[in-house]
Length: 132
Image (cartoon, rainbow, N blue to C red):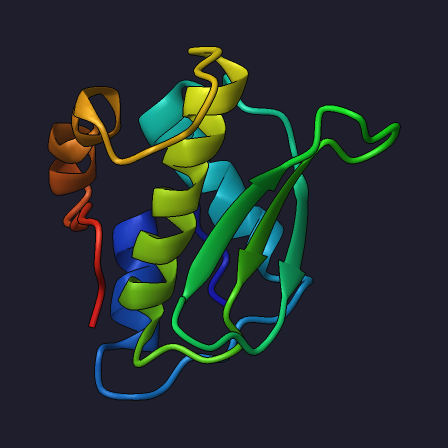
């Protein structure tokens, strides 16, 4: 991964031609960039896991009864390219924002969710409900 804080540079580095497999040590740097650029560093660091999933590329979970990790983002272990990975991570971060900052009972694809489309577009990313 290049030494940069620019999301555009990372997307250009990885390209859109090859498959991207996220690794646990690389995710925090992308999370940090998205948190800074889209959410003004308002989000805390949740537990982020990587696993193979059927029917989804990402998942946001919350457990109000948990003692240590109340919020968890799960990411699929394989994406068609780096940009798709960033879009999915950002998508799940919007759900996290809805729950943590907006205090919504359920973090759904509603008006507040889609209010982030402009910020995603400025970074060259898409925010949508279904990917692929």
